[in-house]
Image 1 (tube, rainbow, N blue to C red):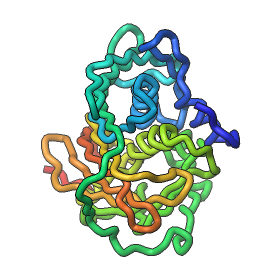
Image 2: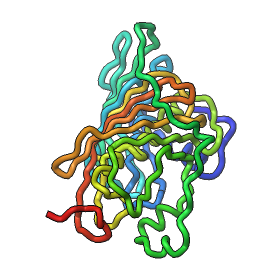
Image 3: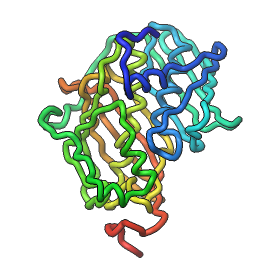
Image 4: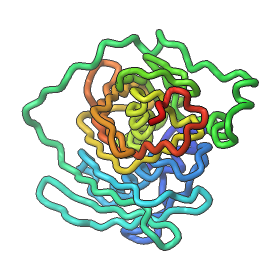
Length: 302
């Protein structure tokens, strides 16, 4: 995959992260990026697994859906090996199954389906009416006194410069979240331009789709990943690619959560380009475990 121009900084780091080392025809190795979390970010494994699958499919077939399960937490200090099973190559569709392995154990698996271009009936739901990203302010940095009260984990999270720029349509205070309905819209794009390879843009969108999605399920409960007594983790992830897009141009992530129960939340997302074209959809279930009442005044005690 040729990428020109070569981006620098966090965007260039992400490009390199998703450019896997090929060990054998169906075996790949990827490194990990420390984004301030204790374990490997779920979006990283999604993007790398999709990159591995794409490398084994003919260029005339593009991914249209993927379904994945997170089995174990990934170790950010060690590489991850991706084993691709070429399950089927049919007349119009190809299927790949990818197992991510670390320390000799599977930590994740993904099934992805690819299709040759084809015309047919089309419709889509309209994009929500929201302010344009350039009309929204960037996130406000925390003051030094507030940062000093955070856990070392959260300080590391905030200190890491990320490859994506975000603009929240309805921002909330993640350190002291109020209860609100389970809906949110977030504009996002890469901080720099990258090349035109659609495979790279799809892998990067898979990476970015793990941001903000399951957090939507916390909104009615007044809790947040930023709080020390809340344990959250992705359990599974599904994604459908509908139409062409670029991740270095503004995209709107419109998310909702229809239900939460049994320490699990379900969230759904629709991703639109700036012209209102629906380019992708997502669904995710995640762990939402309240491990203590510390620093969570909005959680009712039973």
